[in-house]
Amino acid sequence: DAGVIQSPRHEVTEMGQEVTLRCKPISGHDYLFWYRQTMMRGLELLIYFNNNVPIDDSGMPEDRFSAKMPNASFSTLKIQPSEPRDSAVYFCASSALGLVGPQHFGDGTRLSIL
Amino acid sequence: SQELEQSPQSLIVQEGKNLTINCTSSKTLYGLYWYKQKYGEGLIFLMMLQKGGEEKSHEKITAKLDEKKQQSSLHITASQPSHAGIYLCGADNPNSGYALNFGKGTSLLVTP
View 1 (spheres, each protein chain N blue to C red):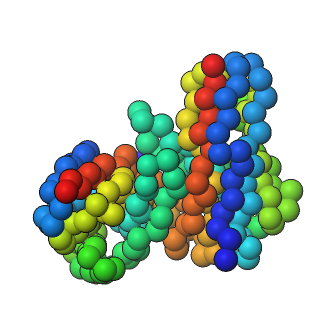
View 2: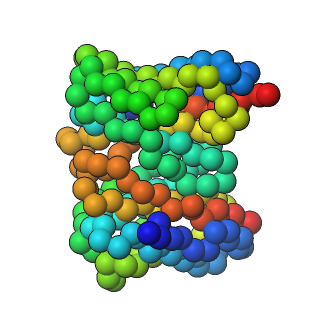
């Protein structure tokens, strides 16, 4: 079975540009999570969806960040405008058991904002 | 909010040696997850513990959740180079509405 698929794997862009990260969860999983990982702060939850509906976005750092899940097989995390402090590895994860149960992670998108 | 502290932050062991990684929570743990992350890759689920005193094993890795449910340990027996990576503990917190809180990880290097 295919795991969680994220694209792109690497993104380098200039400050002020719009960045869109993409995620395809495992088929049949009804929870989808977006995390950000940095050396200083570790792995932080940004937002999660249940059945395509955002449930908790209190981890989203500011209004420059937005996430959507138009259908069960696709989600995007958008940063507009991007800033150097947004540089991090962004992970998407999905699960079938929601908040109690293992989450399956993608390989992440390494984002560098110059 | 719940905080998870992992110790040690990093570890270098010789192949064949045993090692233990600890994860301590500031609040009661309702569900504790161990993940392994290889450098440059995503997290791979290892084990989940929910009951105080619970112990689970997978190959040479054993994880325990203490009776008071505020600490978990991960023990690797006869370490191998394939065990190298970053080990993270994650925890459910049903009161916060968040999915998982994670510790900052323990970086493990196994030398020949």
